[in-house]
Picture 1 (spheres, rainbow, N blue to C red):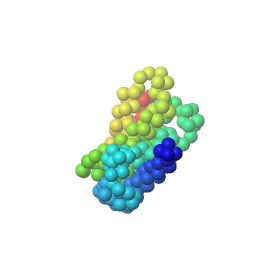
Picture 2 (picture 1 turned 90 degrees about the horizontal axis):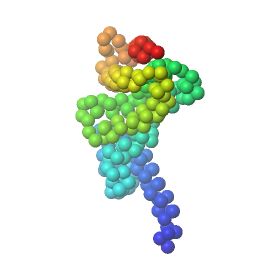
Picture 3 (picture 1 turned 45 degrees about the vertical axis):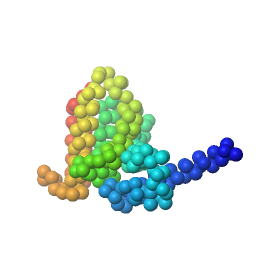
Picture 4 (picture 1 turned 60 degrees about the vertical axis):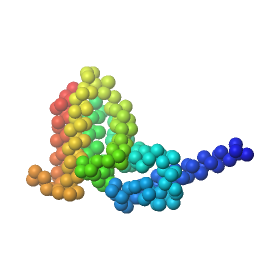
Length: 211
């Protein structure tokens, strides 16, 4: 008898996990990071909160799972322009430049991600850190597409410096666009400001990684 019930048990668990993940997203989108809590997610999902701990470890584990399996962060395909064949025809420098500029647009198009970045800056906690961890997977995937080993010289350190710089600038400007958009003479709600940033990143990348 126990053996015949296992497939159903697995289906029930999967359905419950999906309900919890959907509830996490619903609470996040409705109430923001500040509104997330085990009780709020359990109530939204219509389940006992014990199941969140059983299936995901804790709320941070649920946040990490959701961020890694949703569009909260841009995917590697989005970052390479959704065309692997065209991306592969670029030089290594062009690939890095493309990813960095696409990252700027991708983050700006994600208001909840920007909200998390702002929250992490002001009041970091286990949830904001777990959501940040969701970028690790796409980051590794993009590295596989860029193929730095084909550059003909070791530029990994230089690329990481560029990534660090562009990530920092993008987060800061995206947060400012929503809260205090006037910055150094630019109106960050104006597309010209972001065109200027992308053009600057492209120029710096080309000069810094000149092949």
